[in-house]
Amino acid sequence: MYTLNLDIAQFLSEYWQKKPLLIKNAFPQFEDPISADELAGLACEEEISSRIVVTKDDNWEVVQGPFEDYDNYGETHWQLLVQAVNHWYPDSQPFVDAFRFLPDWRFDDLMASFATPSGGVGPHVDNYDVFIIQGEGERRWTVGDNTPQQRRGGNPNSPLVEDFTSIIDVVLEKGDMLYIPPGFPHCGETLTIAMSYSIGFRAPSQQELVSEVADYLLDKNLGQQRFTSISEPDAPGVISQEHQLGLMDLLTQLSQDPNNYQIVLGKLLSQNRFELDICEGEEAYTEADLQDAFDQGAGINRIGGLKVLRLENDTNSRLFINGEVYELPNTPEEVLAILSDNVSLSSDIASTLCQNDEVQSLLLTLINQGLCYLADTEA
Ligand code: SIN
Ligand code: CO
Image 1 (tube, rainbow, N blue to C red):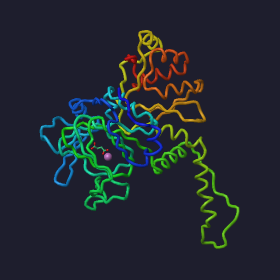
Image 2: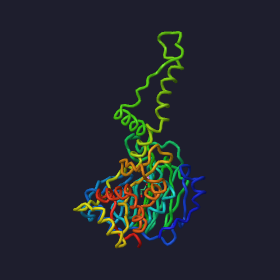
Image 3: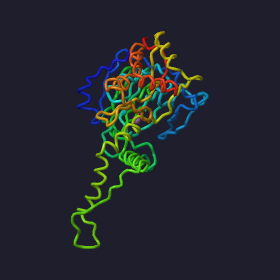
Image 4: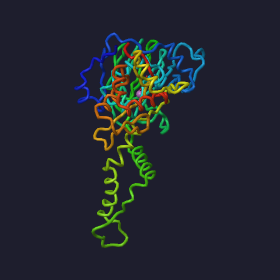
């Protein structure tokens, strides 16, 4: 069990997206959700995103995975980082669940790392929120203030920043957690062989949103309205302030119509940045197979990382799953809520939900697409 020892309401009002926070003993009796050997095993897989960062004198070298062996790297000065461990290692789900006090759409992935003494990725700034949780071993973390940072060596393309003055300087021990909002420079340095975990949360940028909405409007041939004026400027060569605002107001009007943004947001925010471990079976299940499975006590699990989202005040009754829209016109809101809020459905609940043909067909589709699977969910 991963029970977060944190006053969530206070955290959300005082720290989330505002300032870093150190929480000693955030997970009492913390157990590593994955072992170093299992992590090394994941990093052998082609489809899993992994890298090794080697610390050199004031320099860092990145080697992209997959990795066959680690013999060349020695006993110190390197760190293995594996992204989206929650997609490939279902046993890590209970750990990830401890962070579902934040909405699923913001959740990026669970990154796990194995670090040797003096290993670390170097001082850097992330544009996402991260919770860093210490497993086995000890790492010293420094965090600076969110003032603009110089890129390392004056190189604008460097992922690293120059050394910074710290506002937090702490040794994390098993079960300790550090929360770092976007923009705060930080640096981890490994003191003893260590496992650590980063739970990342992202939000789209204006660029991404504008581009997604524009693609949708072009695709659906929407947004054809043009500017009309109520008065003209005195000089022919000027674009008046009133005309500038009137033109930009066309964009505001577009962006305020739920018919233009809801489907875009649902699709965009239900996608994953990292590959999913799709578990398509050899043969398609039928409705009868599904009922048999429920009768034998099987429930339904989502594959790790799958996002199933609903929009508050949606114009339509639907779910957004892995970047696709699933229309469910005959499904009540409470059922959409059960489907989107639970990563796993017990056989009783799944079987009751399947009395609605539309839901049964959705669940069957998800199972046959390999996005959900039948499993013993009672454990
Ligand atoms: C690390 O574990 O060293 C990297 C995590 C992070 O900085 O977000
Ligand atoms: Co970071």
